[in-house]
Amino acid sequence: MKKKITGRSPIGVFDSGIGGLTVARSLFEILPNENIIYLGDTARLPYGTKSKETVIKYSLEITKFLLHKNVKMVVVACNTASSVALPYLRKITKLPVIGVIKPGSKAAVAGTNNYKIGVIGTLGTIQSYAYKTQIHQIERNTEVFSKACSLFVQLAEDGWTENKIAEMTAKEYLTEFKNMNIDTLILGCTHYPILKSTISKVMGKKIKLIDSGEEAAKEVRRILIQNHMLNSQKKNGVHKFYVTDFQKKFKEISERFLGQPIHDVKKVKL
Ligand code: DGL
Image 1: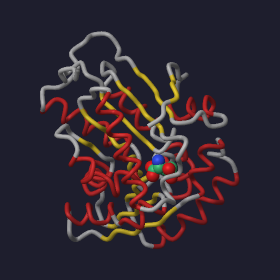
Image 2: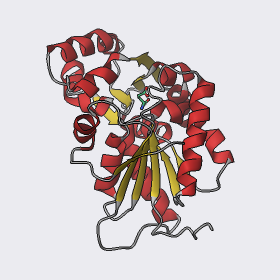
Image 3: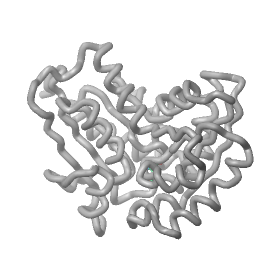
């Protein structure tokens, strides 16, 4: 029997893998009393190079899994999935489904002074034009420059975040944004906040970096308050993690992304 959904129900979060733990980390910080269920689709990652149809299919399967766990809201931590799947996910539930594109875009538009915004993400995210479309819906007169930075994902996973290779790669990808005179850059991928200091070094301190995951976490709090669905418990929330495969170096990578040791991880079949 389905349990009644209340403020005590968990928030469901999903990603193509462990990158979304950067979003979970922001949620833990902003909403320490919330119970959270995280699913990383580690058996099928990356999503960033897959077709739109496949990403939608996987996202639907995961959302159904989370709904079975009686979550009170679904947070799509993955930028690639957020770019293409949200309307489809919203068709199968009346609960709030929050992606990272809108919160990241809103923060970028609020932060820019010259209305020139850069967006970096996976190939799937960039080719979907989701950020560009969203930014233009908020502020028509904005110039948006986008670029897929695929290698950043591997660098973040290998922990090569502040060495020469990371800096050279960032220079290669990002120099064109400097020439375009952007003043704000959206980190439109779960992995990129891990490379924040190198990206900032290459772009210069004056360029505002927007972490879409962090902005999504703030949006989650706003919506829970608005819907009177905040968890009122005084103790810290319970965090449960599910993966579809125990990929190699799971513990090491996940702890780097989450910023703390990870417990209670189960492998599931969707
Ligand atoms: N989580 C993905 C994203 O934010 C990056 C990794 C992948 O391609 O699956 O777009």
